[in-house]
Image (tube, rainbow, N blue to C red; front, top):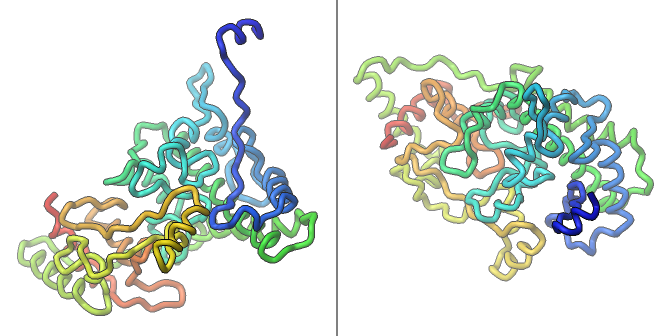
Length: 363
């Protein structure tokens, strides 16, 4: 076999590894000892891409995580494994950093799962998505982007991908905690496993569990005003147009008076790109060198195209979510109530804006 490989020129590829999240940090600012301590702790807690582990107290389904992890393959019964590497890694990367081999060619960039921030959710501002939100993104895809629909996958395969995204997110948030402790606060080494679990891992895991357990963290749209006649729909659209243009709503600043995405705010960046923006072009170029992907500007949606990345949903329900809670990780604010904030629109107002936005679409 060895002789055959030598003749044929085949080689051995080492198993993939999770990369440390050094983005935004000059490499010299993190010592070799600090990197080793963080990497060892993460591997002890979360394993490797081929052999993932679920830390004690983290409520993930290990069998689903294992089903999504590792190299692509299947058994005699047709059960698939390695789903993440088969379907997702080209864009999202092995580590879930959104910087896979094809990421630099895409606009917008693929999602970086490590931050635990997801744009299209049915939960209130600052709250993690439901598993059903992630599953919805997988089955719908994200219109106008490179993210396709995976509705053809079996239900358990979808569940496995959702669970693995949550796993990568919890791991990424734990890694952020470790960098803050070890590098920023210069914590004494070696690290204490119990402390890392209690302060870094379990809070991240609980933030995912919270909306599943507490219905108050999930948006519950109020009754929809009747639009069952042309006159009622026209009245709702007219009211929505006034609300859209109001000072409190702030819609016009980004999306423009005509809803074409041509507002006065031109320099918009999401939370994944904002840290790359300097005061001058030279500063931006310097900051970009600390990241895998160059800075990418955010373009407000042109409603006339009918291209809504989070979907529309029955009666425009998904648009209601976007208006209510905003789009997390972006400058798009929410106008509905959230924990500690009363909101600037009522549920009925939001429905009127939904009708107005839908009326602008050509599709």
